[in-house]
Amino acid sequence: MIERSIEVEVAAPLAAVYAIWADLENLPRWMRFVKSVRILPGTEDLSRWQFGLAAPLVVEWTSRITRRIPLRLIAWESVSGLTNRGSAEFFPTERGCRLKLTLSFDSPSGLAGEFLQRLGVERWVDENLIDDLRRFQSLVEQDTPRQPVA
Image 1 (cartoon, rainbow, N blue to C red):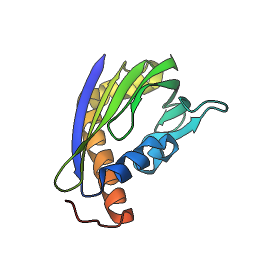
Image 2 (image 1 turned 180 degrees about the vertical axis):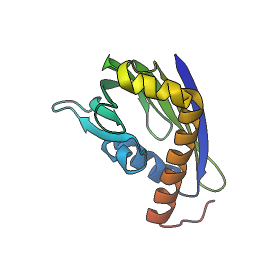
Image 3 (image 1 turned 90 degrees about the horizontal axis):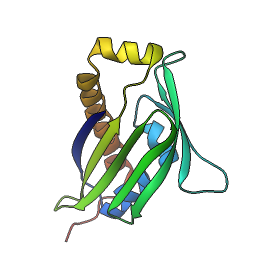
Image 4 (image 1 turned 30 degrees about the vertical axis):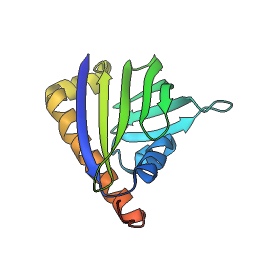
């Protein structure tokens, strides 16, 4: 299993950062290879994910929120498809909020897995997570009105 943690500081109120992240269907806006996240009907804790470049380099899974502490933590794990788990932790800072994203996953099988192995999956994940969190940071900072931090 591959595990990675990446952090970014966002110059926006913690409540705003948490709210934007907690709406999982938003994730494709800043996570380049997340094609879609759909909350399954009748539940707020189960979601269906599509991740990859394009067919046949796309993997899918269903994920369940395993722990949610408002304004502090969202944790999840897959219940079908690609084995993965992770958490997003939110910490108040002088500038706003520090977001720590931790992901653990099995490398996909098939063409997607072969492609990632040739690229050097761990380096590829690090680079893409850093880029994704920088996109998130920019999006939140541009879309959130500045408020003085006490």
